[in-house]
Image 1 (tube, helix red, strand yellow):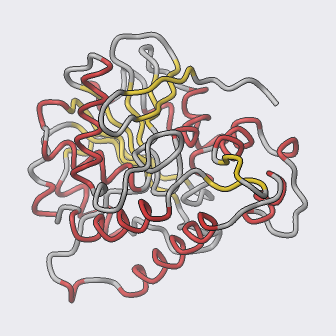
Image 2 (cartoon, rainbow, N blue to C red):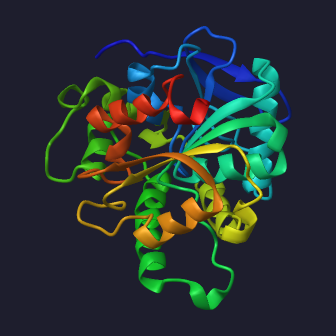
Length: 299
């Protein structure tokens, strides 16, 4: 297995935050992962990155090697404060933030609360607006999201005897080992685990994930509120949802609402990609192409 791309570090504070960094420039992109993930979700994006100042992938509180504070410490506002704390630590006055899944909601919330700190946003299959009224909720879409999250959450209580058993959870019946996976994906799964009595368990806190899931639903902005975000935006969508063949998390109608509310300068639709696979292999190369300093969101 190849050596990891990332140099690790930590943002000090009451809740210390772990991060990985690729590149040396003074204004790296800040990358925010999904609800039960960690910064290695950006492995392939970092490898193909065109942005010269590099990238910093943050482990959100409750995930990866960041601290896991107790219940009542999570939600979009807490994460947005952590983002600003990280920008301060890195010496970035006005940063580019890329967020995948829940990370996209955190990025949007940061831009709403701290508009002077956000230069541009890259939303990766996340950040859709909260309906104005409960009656506007699409129950089929909501059920698909609940089903996908529950599968991701379920593993957080589990102990796996070996990393291979962990891969069996994600790829049932395929008998895969870490050596069978592309190196960037293998590194993601290996970093996701920590040793405990009896084997390995995912680093993400279920308490954090469940609290954030509820708060994202209630705290995320409506389409009307999103109009308060003035920075340039790139929007990336996967063709499929959490599972192959499932409905996309951002439908055409939701895409239209985002484009109407935000200053979307660039769009990327990823045929054949699902919500997870979009972050690896050739899909990630396409995502990295958005982060070209000559691209629309930088003008």
